[in-house]
Length: 312
Image (cartoon, rainbow, N blue to C red; front, side):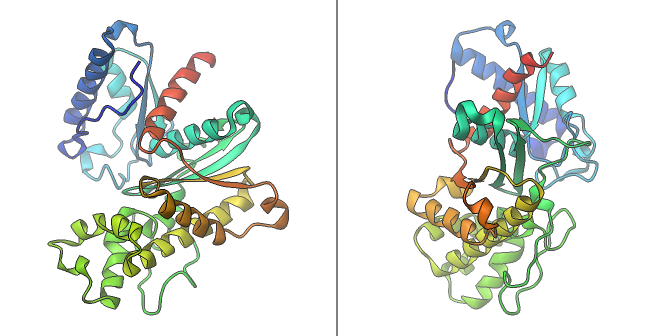
């Protein structure tokens, strides 16, 4: 058994064929670490950023992480299964992390509980769990919380432009609460309010955006402005979710989980403050962090693969 993250380059920017080959090699690498054989692997859990169908077909409109035209409509799960010769069970990576958070938090009570998760990364992933199972939706694209439109009044500062998402939407949650949102929308604005800030001296806005989390962890005023807007965006997203599914728990994961305990607790507290719940909901709802950092998605995908054996 390998109970840690075994990393290798995804190669997604090199196109589907190269990326599939990288995943085949990644499985071989894990098998070698266990001193086992490929024949002993009964199923593989695959998690990718969405949007994608329930069967792992990348959206025909593409996505933040699969932006090249060759990925649009690509049958990721099916092609990987063909190359491996092993059943592949697909989960959107936000769904996978949400599934893991739900089962880790509720334990034996997981089949009787519901939750919603927001996973902040390059984009904003998410997942809705009902009765311990992923809500996938008719086309498999349920839980795409990043592309839910949220109110911007009171969230944006004076003169701050309405944020635009890479998906083509304006004023959705991902346009604020994501690394892409920082790079495209938040940081360019806040650098105009902090003209002498060190981030303005970086070679590119993309490199500067990657430094914001560590600065927030150090209580940098500009970075805290950005993270407070992100927390407000997630809070407003959770407010919408509360009126649709009224979950037992709200989980926050992604990059903020990898910061210091002090900072991530501050961030979750700010999300909670910006989530408007009814008194009855306040009495029963829990706010928590997705556990296990980068392992959450991998463990959720593995859990989905394991659970698939009980569905036949």
